[in-house]
Length: 293
Length: 271
Image (spheres, rainbow over the protein chains, first blue to last red):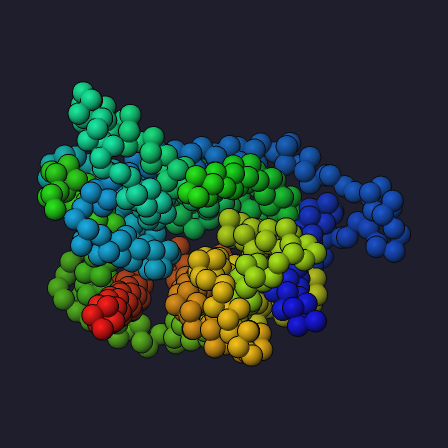
């Protein structure tokens, strides 16, 4: 009896505040738009039974998503931005993680703390910090003009480049930590062996270090890719009018256009889009666990 | 111990410069006399003064702290129970669904979580305010807590609990006297994680807050959308300072504990 209560408490909480809300989103995505508040009309009545429910389903909002090219362009551009920025985060994060793993053992806790510290600092503030740096009169342009690299200020803020910089910056710790933990476990004698057997340092790195840190690389890439796909704060602060990301579209559909059914349909499709990387990620985690045992 | 190669030294320097320079610039310019955030016009603390006069910010800060304290405490209780059920509960009906619901919020985009909770609150006719934000934050942060706590529960020896039960403890006593002290570090770090997640959250709070309750991130976001402002720099500096002091204190405390533990172990070996 006691066990039952113990299980029931978190279970019921999650059912009520996680699963039921999704059912509602799904239901509203299949409803009609109406101007009244709340601006949607439920299409079915539970009393009419399941058959009436299926008969009344209305995929209008989903068809709308395919007709207006704003939406599929936003999905594609979110995917593109997420892929490219994951790649750059890996490019920036790997050398840092590598150097941390090679640092003297007594430095490592401090280095770890230095990587984690920004993670505890407000995400919003870290994005905001870049607004002052990237603007036309910003720190970066002032610095580049002072050193004579450029004579005219570059427009970086409110472009996709600013979005990439912002994403790489805020998600860097998510890449460094898993790669570092994979590299730290790596047995140094394997690299020595490779070098003894005639590998150059570079080819030992390619043939031994990279493959052995693969699990960390994959975990890091997913930890960056999945949240970036639905990102809202970075594109709305650093991006411009041509930066199209689905999280921002959903937000505007909901708060500006007040079209709840379409916003819900956007959410459902985004969720479907996320299922693939999440399943892949879980499979990778499982493999990693099996390999660890 | 071999020294760092030049390549590794350069990577570390550039990497940490990239991570910290933006925040350092922010802090420096919060002491700028000028209203223009990018032009240095002498040292001044006037923006801090103006910040502390700004009632809207102070109210929002108070709401944020209230929400964070309540939601992280509730999330810690629920998340710890959830972790215990997952690791020690054995089989029960719908276990797969349960574990799915624990892990799913970790990867769910915040816009979707926010949207769905808002539609729920409207559906059941709950007025949006502090309560709805607390409910929303509790829900997503309990999942983080349960992941942190369950990783600790998995690694600790179950026979300690069984010994307590054999020696006449009730299950509740065994949990309170044996299990809880052992998992306490994980529970505390789970609470801290939930607390910072709640302080930091903009998107979910925007969906679930009403006109009666605005949190600090929402306030900052609407101010920042209009451009950079020295008042926000001052606010950011205060927040960065609090976090830095907190994290450094925590790491010194853990270091101290580790040293003490080591010394005790050595003493025990000698004896």
